[in-house]
Amino acid sequence: MKRTMILFLLLTSVFCILTGSAVPSQATLCRIPDMEGWKMESEMFQELSAPSGNYGTWHQRLFIDPFRRALVVNLLCGRGPGELFIPPGPVSQDDRPIGFGATYETIEIEGFHGVLEYYPYAGYAFAVSLPDSCTLCIESKALSKEQLYGVTEFLVRNMFPSEK
Image 1: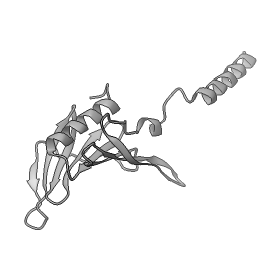
Image 2 (image 1 turned 30 degrees about the horizontal axis):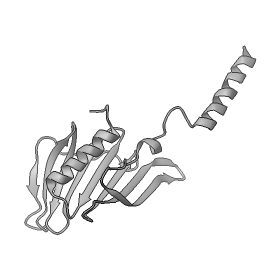
Image 3 (image 1 turned 90 degrees about the vertical axis):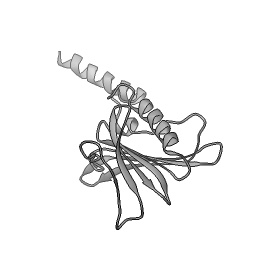
């Protein structure tokens, strides 16, 4: 029995090394997918780690569409970045009288809650709270609110197809 167990563990270890782990790591899951019609201009992937352990991942991609409009996508996952705080209930506010004219509203995309921000000089930004302590942030100076919403829907559907 003991010999069989050792042989089984050895074969399982060799299989996992050769084919990759059977259980995907968070680093594998927290990736921004490619988007048809968009060219990836740059990409950065950073493990958020310290001597005390791994605290998650940060994946960033800069996409350019055929009209040369830029879209920045950040995906933060893990306990380091933590959960995105979404105020309960519908919220629609601005940052006046002290701010720069930004507006904020709570949104729902594909069943997930988030915040839409609009800065007159910087454009729209979405921040969406996703499963597994992930936050998707999408920003563009050139895209309309509707275009950015469509891109966000596409990314959420492709990253978490069975969640809601």
